[in-house]
Length: 497
Image: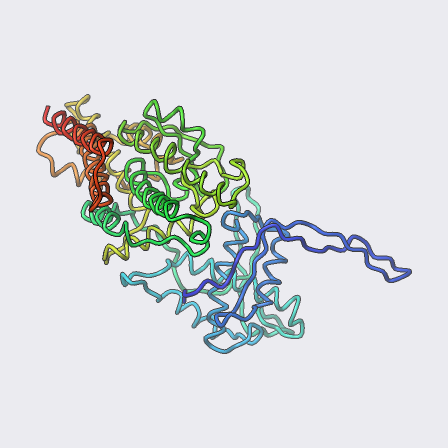
């Protein structure tokens, strides 16, 4: 059902409100309130969908709204999209929907598949979409089509077009609430175990990133503001930002939403100590006060420092020189900056950037940013297993206790930002499966870090050589290339010891 997005978040909208009403003169005195976000909503043909806009505006009084992804109100907008598309395709008004329409709607939601021939959404997501849709239809019934019985629970005097049923929900406090819901014969979804991204796909992404380096273009807006030299530097920033995305996803196991909110100023001193401060975001986009500090290889720390002190700094200088921003105060305090505004990159923009790279790489199976996190967590569990076995030689896989596992998983959780070790339990089997390939236990963490550093350096050199093609090489450039070659030699030599 998804093609072009039907809704758009408009920030900081001033909405009129009735301050008071003079009953003697009939005069209405208006005031205004500033709404953090207002949703513009259209039908698939581009014409305004006013009922959806009015509904979301009304809901904004009680639902949380933020300017990052819309908050809870944003979830309502996303869910409502599916009903709008369905009604448009079936040529039926909201007030004319029948019970059979909703049955068909649910069937389509459950059976839609993606390019990998996998379900687009699980049963829990379908239930959430239907719940929002019913809530919207009840709102239409109460506020717009007041003469219609669109959705509700039948009684002796009322027969509704969409027949709901009452369900009792018991809360932990012992309190019970009754909700009118659409009867659905689909079971509650069980969360599928996460799968790590394969080594082959990681390498394919890196090769594709380097191969597509010269295929990107500066937007028309920036072409009119930047010189040719500035445009070339801007393309370099965009390439280095995509490169940093892959490096951080693989080396730190951060969540995709954490990637775009890694603080900058906090990390300047931390990176010198080969540490990275990461926000722990779980379910709350704008919760930036919960930080964790993790050790990283020196090569990654240096790479991140170069990005901050060179590529990011030059981006800010370009934006200032072109008048896009007025001062450095307009720049958000994050490492991963939007190339055209100096603000945080929106979650969907980072996702689309990764998706475009995946498509260009020709990867046919499911491949997403989260799979880097699953790969990192699996490796972390595996490495802690090895360390534990070295310290406890009498322990084997078959006699390790749940207490032992929890001790290991707590250490892993300190790196990954998991609140509960129970969320990590399924990684145990994944880690043992990979360890079964080894005939003996040995310390692989340092070896893996060295090999990753070699991999990153060789990819950098590919880019350097590509950019120097047909140009006269200066002594400074030769020294830089020699320095990287020396680093590779040192890493290889240390890996043999």
